[in-house]
Image 1 (cartoon, helix red, strand yellow):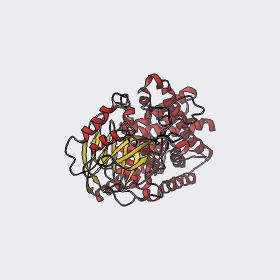
Image 2 (tube, rainbow, N blue to C red):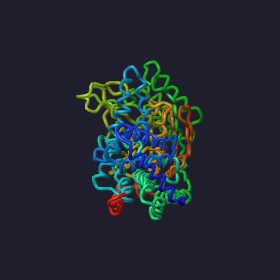
Image 3 (cartoon, rainbow, N blue to C red):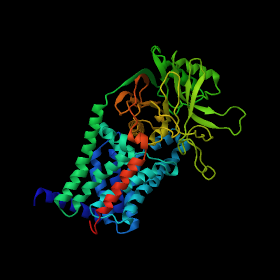
Length: 522
């Protein structure tokens, strides 16, 4: 038996063993495979695990005897993927464990089960359309990507840890995001990682060549094209210097009455540690000023001590409706403050975190949001381009908003020259969460062809150029600041111009190709 035949035989043996599983053994195997696949996510980025996790999913899909079982293949795999990929959500509930600790099983396991429905829907849909033969990999990959896209906007949307996010480890491959966005990366990943499942089919040189094309040449072509783009577009700067401050305020003490003055003092001290001459903006993270700065003139004037003489302080802080206004409202905002304290611009966060900033179905659920206070936040109007004195136009993203592809620039807004992402990842401790959040924000810049400036309370604060090249960074759990020259944007990218239209067209083409190559048996 030659080497090629042995490869096919080994794959067939593994596929047969998986097909023989039933009941709880089958379910546990799928959960384990999903959990294994999640090790490819940042910060571990162990990409090779997908070459076992996803082919095994295909083999178990092939062996599913019923439609219900086909749904279960995607659902149980998705449960493992999300439990491991989103375990860090529990850290936010431990900030006040006495009050919210009981919610951990619901937040981790319940949320994972809900999100896994989209994966189950993908495998069920593949069964319903009769995905067979070599084409089943293309059909599954297309429907998997479509399910991730649906997850990004249904039920308010939660595109965290989509399959394409595993490529944060490879800047050249990330350049695919400029053309196909996150969904183009997801489609590429699904095709490449599911293709080895074809090795369990009838041995043939054509089948082996197809596996090589999808698993090796497709990612290699993406890497080569991305490397060429990186080489052809050198870094460029605007000449404007920014100072990014990372105050590292523990989440458990941030809103303590006796500590808030000290937190504001520390942020000002870090901002003025060296001369502010030549600095155009000092940037603080989300809610870095723990006061309602729109009505608190004294604390706003003190915060303004961090503003450069010829520049601005850009800081996150809460905002409340004026006294006497009914109903009372609360916003999570970005303030642009000039020397002396005047507010020259405001941006209100639009995409709020369920249960973190508001309680869905509050009339039905007897719980409170995990952030301070009982009042739900009010969403802002959506993506905006801010014109700030002395600075290029900017697209602000507050925390959670950075995970949503195609929601950086408003449809009726002028194109900005950079993205400003302020966030407070102190909720998630020293976990994978801040690394995954940073990876998502970085990809937004690549998708739009815009530099990204990110200020985080406990890290990771960083600056990337419009191709995702790192310019500066302050690590997770560090306290300090850094000065950086703002990079220049590049010309609008295909994804920035057409949004999800291009990747969805690729998904449709992949689906059609898969159906064209289906056969009556694998």
